[in-house]
Image (tube, rainbow, N blue to C red):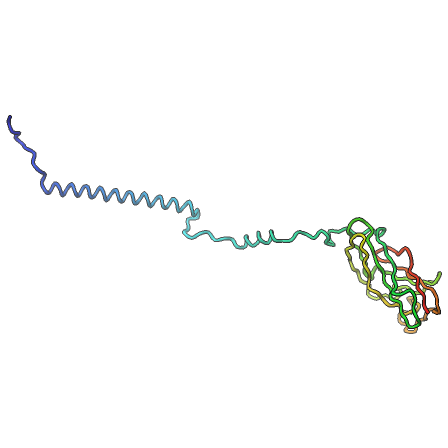
Length: 219
């Protein structure tokens, strides 16, 4: 058997260097490509987490949060608020005259007042101020004294009345004298007859007059 004319020998060192250079460049290129891919993936993930493109987290709108908290903590309207309760029907109001005693000695001044009661089934409001109050004292058919004859600065007072719950007024003193619109500035008003005389008190309030008078004696 003949020997080949061009036997293959070991590659030279120059060939090895060229191969190593090519392999090294290939690895470097692969690393660069991988780095670019990783960078793009990271950028895409960041864009999804921050649509505005900023690196800082979005700030919380504290004003909107406060408004929401305020709306959730606001109390509901009071069911018995005067603005939502209907006005009382005067026909369902019961006014009762009151005196602090049934009889008075010569130096005793009767204290006059009244109670007002809502006899209806529902809560209602009534103006029970001095602008609607009229106290009248009579002796038989004689009208002796009326609170409105010389009244000054009458005022309104809106009151919420629960059903079947009497409310009392502030007492006022009667000086045991007659009244008239002509004697408001007269300090020497005519005193009424005493000695065991009977007098009756009637009261009107919130447009509702008392049904029964309150009788008392003066000595």
